Length: 180
Image (cartoon, rainbow, N blue to C red; front, side, top):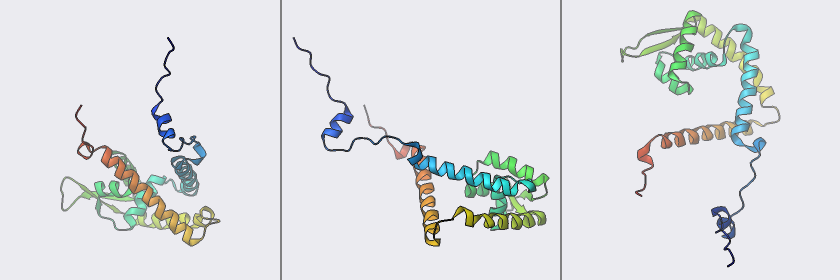
């Protein structure tokens, strides 16, 4: 008795229905890889610029955010910068020892700390901002001002999409399980 061929796989059935074959994964074409690679290059560039001043990129982010309006809580600072709250606590402790920031009990919430820049923190932030701005022409070489604005808009959209997906994935109510 002849044996029957195995049933077609889901992918084969999908292709037979006119769906395109899955594309071959090419790392150099991966959006995540390209963004990560650009981030690494930018981070290395900033570290080289800031290195002599003894400031990390994470500390620079804190200085920059606080320069926009300090006196915000540690939790809000972590949220705005996309930093882990525990990691931010360690960063702030180092920055306090360097005399760049001060933490005090928050007026509205006694359980929280409010973070402000010191005079030295403001001075250093202005110096680092000028350094960072001096690197922009090299980073954006070959792009028009419009393309730079569009790149920023698209990167913000990618970030929002990833955050929205992560939030939905961590919220079981957003994805009710079907009954068996």
